[in-house]
Amino acid sequence: MRTAAAAGNRFCTRGCAAGSWPEMAAGAGESLGLPVVDLASSDLGATAKSVRKACVEYGFFYVVNHGAEGLVEKVFAESSKFFEQQLGEKMALLRNRNYLGYTPRGADNLDASSKFTGLRLMATGKRILSLIALSLNLDAEFFDCPVAFLRLLHYPGEANESDDGNYGASAHSDYGILTLLATDGTPGLQICREKDRCPQIWEDVHHIEGALIVNIGDLLQRWTNCVFRSTLHRVVAVGKERYSVAFFLHTNPDLVVQCLESCCSEACPPRGDQIYFV
Ligand SMILES: O=C(O)CCC(=O)C(=O)O
Ligand SMILES: [Fe+2]
Image (tube, helix red, strand yellow):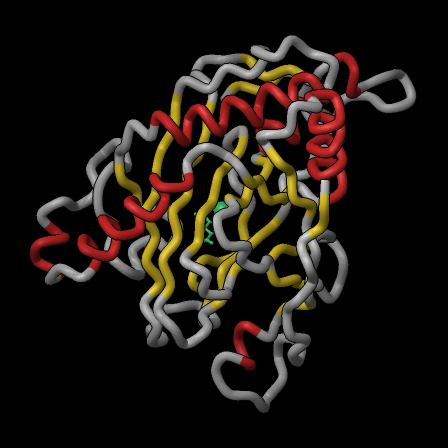
């Protein structure tokens, strides 16, 4: 495992009165070096160990040699073709009751979803999940994720009056097992590693060409009794148009998620409800 160079700028903290784009908004973050995991490594044990460390310490990491390199560029090209259309054309694909389809800006800044089979992204996700399973001393196939959504996200450059504090996406954690994220390189994504700390510290997640960002979801946090982190993150506006693609991996809706035995003990009992219905 290597660590991404913490090449980011150190700007003023959120709430500074002065500052112009991109300093004022993007500058809310400290710089951050997240772990980088090479999925093509032949040393399975060492890779699983790296993944575990990243999940425990950050809940966020990069993967390289993930097998979906060409695909991501194609999806970005299709995404910008779609979002560049007139609103009327996009509204023809308005989100349906199953949350599939177009979500106009302001209606829900976390939910512009699009159905996609994403077989290669699914293969990448499964590879990461098998490493996670091995790192928890489970069978490589332990985590089944038959449900997945691809979300094409477009953050317009200009601020919208309805935006709350200029957030492209307000602070949240993802609720599934894990998320694969590709961005077009425009900054804005930030994580908060200690959500209960006051004031919160937000760190910029930098772009690494060709890498995917992986983030642990609430379900995996629950499964591991909070040993793995589902880390709070957000997207701040940087005064520049931004595209990203998020691929969310979920379990079967009727699966019972129970704290893993290896993650609890008498000294460390399951946090929250032991049995959790998704
Ligand atoms: O656009 C991004 O970089 C992050 C998107 C995100 O966090 C989400 O859709 O859950
Ligand atoms: Fe998210």
